[in-house]
Length: 178
Image (cartoon, one colour):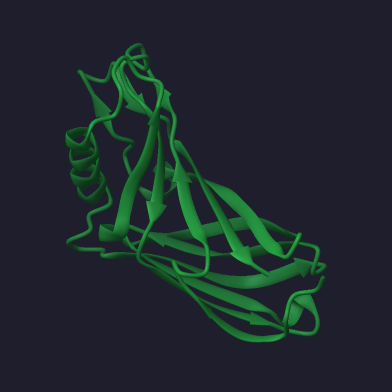
């Protein structure tokens, strides 16, 4: 299957955009590895005849990030935990000053079956380069990247005087119709 040429408007009704976190520090057993879903996002993908004539722009509302799952930890993740994590997430990402996270491509290379998108990611008002890997199979487009929070000036969340920390690397994955 090949990707359909043209301009495509995408959002949560079309697929999923997930963030995955892990724990570090001496108290990591107490915390949870999280799966967070972007519930409010939009994307414009321009698919050209050649990868080099393609582009993508994605905008994610920070206030639309919702904790979907927490694994590990001493106790199961409660609704109260989810609410508290959401508050901390909005605080860390400064959602009041920077309500969106934006990715704009600068280059696309590869084939329709497997390609790399290079671009600029803006998080909490700071921009930097990011490379996203993607592949098409079974009518789905799947891919992702690893975002090192500190590279964008985001201090990973910590608790219990630093004994429980969120690892600096956050996985970002997507699953969309091709």
